[in-house]
Image (cartoon, rainbow, N blue to C red; front, side, top):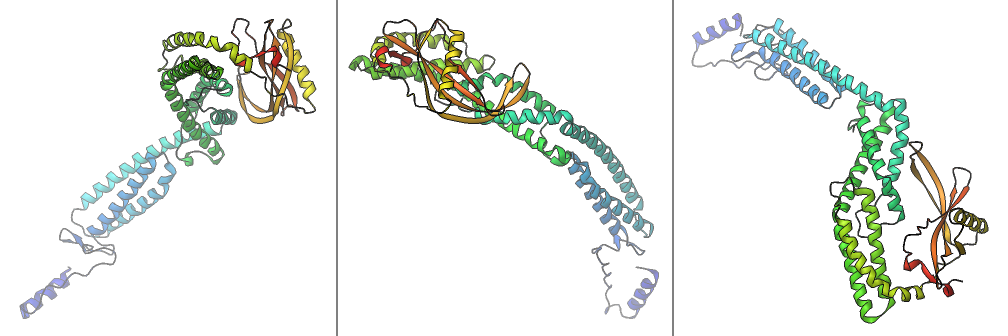
Amino acid sequence: MNVRSIVWFCALAAVAPAQFRVPKIPKVAGGGADRGGSSGTPGSGALGGGGRVKAELDQAERALDGCDRHIKKENPDGCTTYHAKFDDSIADAQKAIQGASIGGAAEYVTRIKDLKARRDEQLKGMQAAGDKNAALNAKFTSGDAEKDKVAIEALGSFYEEFHGFNSASAPGDELLELSARWPRVKAEVQRLLETYPIVKNRGKVDASGHELVMAVRKLSGDHEQRVAEVDKGMEKMAMWLKLDLDGANERLLKGEADGLWGSGLQSENYLNNIDLRFKLYNLIGKDHPKFDPQLEPTTRAKQKELQARLDKFIDKIVAENKPPADNYNGPDAAAIREEARKAWTAHYPDIKIVKIGLNGNWFRKAGWEWDDARTTWFKKDDSKLGGFLIIDLGHPQHLYMMPLNSYMDHINGGRRETKVGMYDRKERMNPGATFLRANVK
């Protein structure tokens, strides 16, 4: 209220004090009820008084709060808009102080000083975050990053295939082959995740690095999932081995009671499962915290007892065995059989081949494999055809079966290679792969 208003008010009060009340101070547009002053202290000037200054400084403080949230996310670019708002609010507050008569102006000046000091600290934080993001961006867009994209793609292919460890079913050849690579895979994943940290906000990295950012994020998730599966598998291995022992024993008891060879053959399957499980267990587990070094000797002792009982069924099992079908007649069949013969003779020239069989059809599969010699991943795209060899080890009644596989390399112009199974002269032949001579045609 200015001097003229005070004189006018006193004159009215003197004339008719009972008929007049103090008029309300009108609100200034956008300024609220206290635009004219603060704590009862009136303001003056075109830009209002303390209420206007406080509102501007509150807005400046909110802008700094917004910038803090971006710095916490290491996204300094997000502060640009907030700092522009801050500068505008501080400028308006300073004009309001200069153009108004405000009680406690020193308090506002001090607050502006504190807010500017906070903004200066934010600038340092923005610089630190920017430097960190620049270093991070350099990792995801460097020449080495292009090379590591190949490694991550190869590992992704591995994880798509590496499953079944946490399963009651005995592992097959594919899982055993993949498990042999597991230690190398773990080391490679650790190297990659140490080189390329998980980035939740792709804005920290240039667009050229976004593909790798996403690939690393997926790699981490896939790895954690497979590690959890392996952990559960190691934990359950003793339980599964016991189920195999119990299953073999139940079938043997039935076979011993009714004399049927079929029960003995089922028992053999359970005992073979034990061999496969320990191959997997030892490939994965010797450095695993849940590996039990006493599990194998204890289980093997019980397996040996069951095997001795099973041997009584061997003659009945072998008498019923028939070789697999020999039903592949493609144009390359003769050449593959000759390749298999040469591969076997190169290793075992003294062991006669009685029959070479090919069955099924070519199966094509693409993926990645690790080359220990070159210490790098390489891409594979090949087809596989299975078959078998029937060999003569000199037994008067029995012949034995060994596996063969032929591979066609589509990356190298369809080049073909045929491999045969390795025979351990000290190893007992599997009854399920043993045939009477009369049953081999």
